[in-house]
Image (cartoon, rainbow, N blue to C red; front, side, top):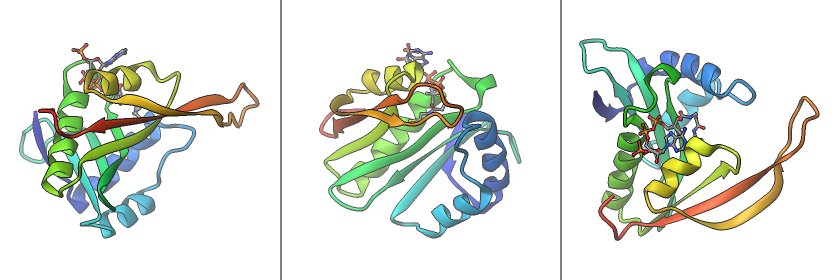
Amino acid sequence: MRLREVDWRDLATMAALEGEIFPDDAWSEATMWAELAMRPRRAYLVADDGAQGGGLLGYAGLDLAGDVADVMTVAVDPRARGRGLGRALLTGLHDLARDAGCGAVMLEVRADNDSAVGLYRAHGYEVVRTRPGYYRDAAGGPARDALIMRKELDEDD
Ligand SMILES: CC(C)(COP(=O)(O)OP(=O)(O)OC[C@H]1O[C@@H](n2cnc3c(N)ncnc32)[C@H](O)[C@@H]1OP(=O)(O)O)[C@@H](O)C(=O)NCCC(=O)NCCS
């Protein structure tokens, strides 16, 4: 596995993965182009299999607006999960945030997203606020809480 900065050639594959991973609120390829255009305020990393023109396995992004960076997304191909890619992408974002002089990182996650909340807790994120019923279900199901989580960047990971 190789971690590298995103390239415009990745965007079509990212958009296809995005549609599979977030079927209810996927970013379009146009949104991804807009994110890319916001560099250096935005920073995206991709994980690929390391081969020439290799398959994209995951991606993650950061907003570097101030002292506290915001995680925009972390996503791993369902076929490549449980192999440490989420961990590698998140650690890569922390390095970028540190390099940009940020002292902390924040993010928002659905409270019932066990794998993501598990990943963030394993990296020292703590819940600083809850937004009850923040995520509405278009199909009429129950609304889900959002957790706002924060990690100080004075630690190693
Ligand atoms: C969350 C996600 C990025 C994790 O990616 P991954 O490559 O499978 O994660 P890793 O293999 O690096 O696991 C790292 C740690 O995350 C936690 N974790 C991963 N999957 C988990 C699960 N199903 N349940 C609980 N914790 C989990 C564990 O702490 C794990 O460490 P361990 O392997 O030492 O136990 C992946 O499940 C994903 O893409 N989910 C859909 C997209 C999403 O919801 N993104 C977050 C939006 S806020």
